[in-house]
Image 1 (cartoon, rainbow, N blue to C red):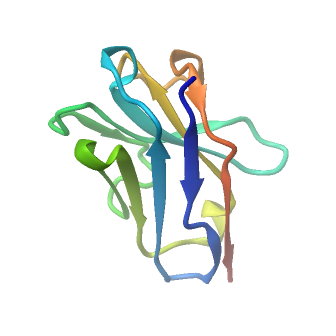
Image 2 (tube, rainbow, N blue to C red; image 1 turned 45 degrees about the horizontal axis):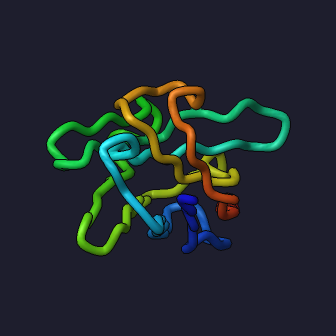
Amino acid sequence: QVHVVESGGGLVQAGGSLRLSCVTTDLSESRDVMAWFRQAPGKERAFVAAITWSGIRIKYADSVEDRFTISRDNAKNTVWLQMRNLKPEDTAIYYCAAGPALQRSPSAYGTWGQGTQVTVSS
């Protein structure tokens, strides 16, 4: 069974940076797209960024495109989300997910981690 585990969340002041990590126990062709989503209290889970196996194709949400960077190292089964210039509205639980296609919808991803909390204070 595939497991996905996130880490790196925490409390940071506005303008600060955090790097989230996502380690998966197994990657295969059916799960070669890795993505980050986030969910703030009372809101639906929202797409943040996604990257294909090769790293050539990447998508970002408009709200983070100039501040966040997604990257991966397949040899380490690890995906990172570097977050810069964080804002209070970035506060949410951040989830890592794996799926077969580069989609923005959560329903396209079949494997999820438990999430890591990111809190940005003003």
